[in-house]
Length: 219
Image 1 (cartoon, rainbow, N blue to C red):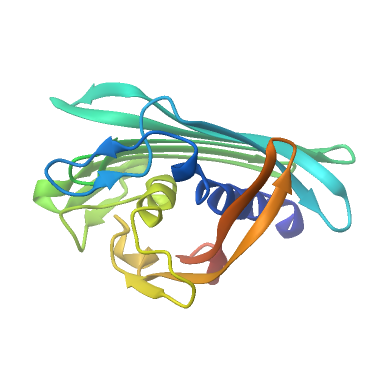
Image 2 (cartoon, one colour; image 1 turned 180 degrees about the vertical axis):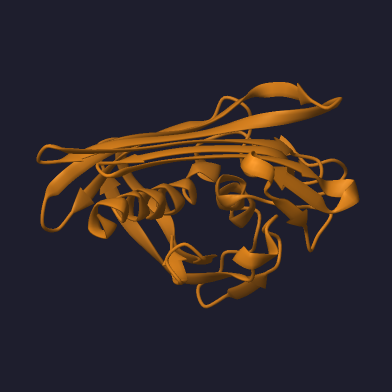
C-alpha cells in the first residue's frame, strides 16, 4: 500500500518542476504593490507522471481558477488533480486551495486521496489574522504565521522565490506547525523536451514533514 500511495509523490514532483517553467509562458499577476507574481488566473498545466518501472502511471493538471469569496475575502482557487493506475490498482489525488494573492496566504484547503486500500479526505479552514486553523472531526490548532500555506499553495509560493541553483530555504509557513519546517532546495537549471517543445526549467526539491509516515516527503 505504501508503494501505491507514493505514486502521488512523483506526480507532485513533476508538477513542481514543470511549474517552474511557466513564468516564461504566462503573463504575470500583480502582488499588491510588490513584485508581480509569476502566475495568474487562467494558467493551466497538464502533465504525465512516469515511473522507471511502470512507464506512464497517470496524468494530472494544475490550474489557477477565478477568484471566489471566502469569508468576505477574494481568493484565487488553485486546483490540482492526478489520476493513475498500476495494473488494476487505481489512485487519485484531488486538491484545492483558496489563496489570497496579495498576501500569499491560504484561507481554505481541501484534499481528497484515494488508494486501493484507503481513502482520505481533509478539509481545513485557515484564519490568518488569528493564526489558527480548524479541520474535520474537531481537528485544529495554532499556526506559526499570519500568512499560512498548505501543500498546494506552497508549490505556487516557491515560484515567487529566487530560484538560483544552490539556493536553499527553510520555511515555517505551513498552517500546521507539525509540518514545519519546509525545506526548499534549488538543484540546477536544465533543458527539458516535452510534447509542447523544449524549455529551460529549474529543478527544485521541496521536503515537507508528514507525521502519518514518520518522515519527510519529497516534492
